[in-house]
Each structure stands twice: as C-alpha cells, then as structure tokens.
Length: 114
Length: 110
Image 1: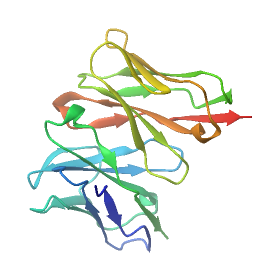
Image 2: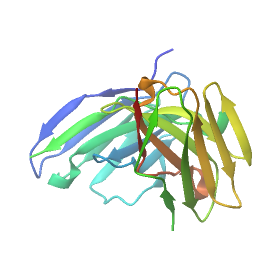
Image 3: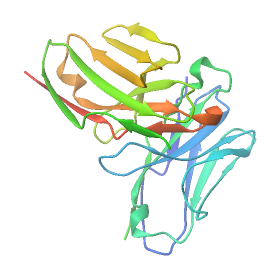
C-alpha cells in the first residue's frame, strides 16, 4: 500500500525565484492538503484540493497556488520567494467520507530560500 | 478565531505514564486529532476523537470533552522511542481546514 510521496526532498532557491513541489496521495485517497511547517512550530494549513478544485484556503498570500490533477496528485507553487518561505512543506492526503477523513502525511519537502 | 494550546515540553521516565493536555477554542468543531512527529520526520497519525469520551489504542489513549474544549493524550509504558513532538489538531468550520497546535516535545529518560 503506497503511502504519500513528495518530491523533491530538499530544495534550495534564491529570493524572487519560483518553486513547484509535488505530491502523490496515498493509494485510494482523493483529497490533498498542503501545510507549511516552520522549525519548532506546528503545521500551518495552506489549502486543500478535492475534485481538482481548491476547497478551502488558509491565511497565505496569492503567491501560494496549487493544482490537483485527475489522478489526485497535486502541486504547490510558490512565486516570488521570500526568505520567510524557508520551511518544511508537507502534503497530506485523505479520503472524503473515510473514517474521520484522517489525513496522512508525506515525508515533506524542505525548502531553503537564500 | 481559532486557538490551540498545549505545553511546550514535558519530561517523563521510561516505563511511566504521561498525559499531554490540549485546550482549544474554535468557532466550529469537526473532530480532534493527535499526531506524533519525530525530529526531521513527517507527522504520523495517532488518534481521532469526534465524540466525548476516551478512545484507547494500545499504549495510547485520547480523551475529548467538547463542552470544555479539552483533550488529552495518555501514553502508557513509556519507551525511549516515544521521545517526539505530539501535535494536537482540530478540524474547524467547514470540515476541511485542520488547525495544529505548536506541539509538545516529550523527552523520555532512562
């Protein structure tokens, strides 16, 4: 049973650049949520995708955008990178109607902005 | 607004029992989750509560009181590998957005 996978595992960018992070959900899941986790903090909700649409969004600027594909995989795009965007980006998948719609996390992408 | 409070750090002894508390304020409630996160790794799911009461799963139990906005995670027979951060999370209004606390770092000593 394939779990949630993310790529790349690590990434280094400079201010002003753009980045795309990728996520494949756990087998059988149809919903993908993205989180940003700064060191020593809990994950912060960015947005959630279901049926290729953004269902809900957290308090993140429009520089953060996403997409979900027909195979349920998802991308997170961040434009005009700032130093403060350095963090661990986590993808979590779940199944609509599943037990508690529990989210299962991928290993994350660690982004460093210089 | 939405807010989740949990202690920053706790220390316990191998073989003992530890209780990690979580209080929350949300404008809507659609379930409470506990996750374990080892340093440098992703959170892993431990438990889910949506109704009041105790849910037991092996060495781990989680309790919820919706009227008090309160939950706890109980870890029994502590092992060194239980040293990790424990995240309390609440699913809020709309049922899609999950808010996480900052986590409680648990240190298990021999």
